[in-house]
Length: 172
Image (cartoon, rainbow, N blue to C red; front, side, top):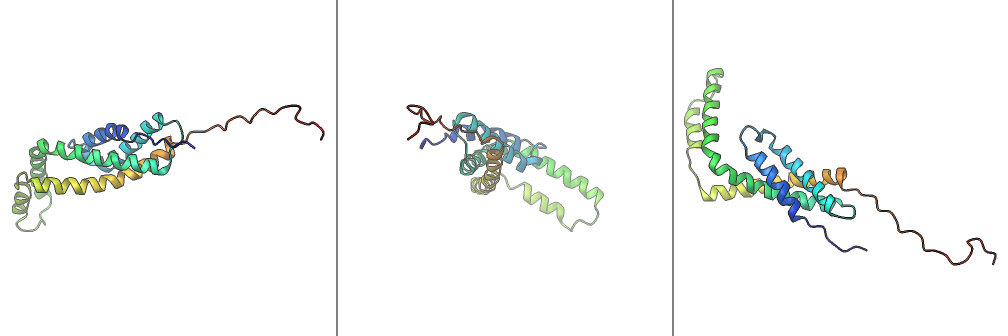
């Protein structure tokens, strides 16, 4: 029995960085959940290439969860410099929505102003990172299990039977 464990960290770092960058880019992040699932499947593919035997669903779940945590970290770090861009987009979106919809509640402009002008808070950053990491880890587990079903099954050929001494059908 082969007791070697697959190396989970390198595929999770590579695929998590890719998924985190794609999730953190404005206007591309609309497929955020799909980027995480796809990133975890990519991590499983990278893991399957480096592992000599077949992968189990547990291997996919582990590498997928790690990929989700890495992606959440990259996404949160990318959000710091992109925060003003996201706030400006929200203001433009709400202004265009106000022109189309005249049934918005009274004081909605104050609500948007309070929600976007809070500034940067370290506690808010870590709370958001924790929540994102939990959600992304669950999505990563899903993507890892899907990735195992797509990439992780390798055929293992049994060893050849031992050579026998003498004729195979000798009379006793």
